[in-house]
Image (tube, one colour):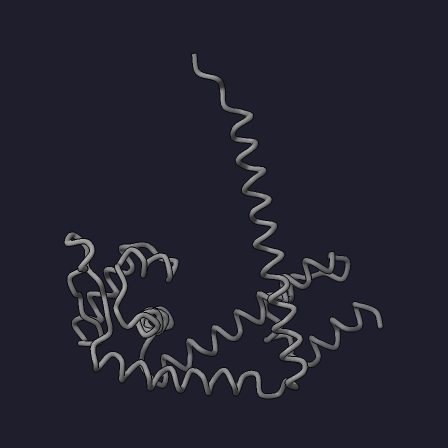
Length: 191
């Protein structure tokens, strides 16, 4: 079956209003470009639905949910700098979110026993209870989103995406090494 026909059927199945990022792909585009756009489209669509459900069901945001999820995984709490790295946001963003969540009684700042200059942030009992409710719903939402896919397809997709992740990490290491070599070769010797 021609790629053009497959794309046309996808548009027919989804409707033009739902094609999203994949609309950027052209018939003549390389398959790697089409895969990348399809991954982006799927990820974006899932994220949008989860954001909407969090907003309507719990009046919260995905960043707040992610913040609470990280703390739930680390009952002993996390340093703000570590939490910032886990969430891949700036320290200022974490501080602002922490201030809000402390006011709401969901998290607490505690002294860091290893560094008196640092704080650890942990869930309060209220925060743990509220997050448990959200996490249970979140899990149901994801199960509903993937419900129509056969188990074998989900297993295969998970396996293939795992292979892609390993490949991308290896590729990044190669790029980093090449960049380091380029940097070293362009440095001028000091006198």
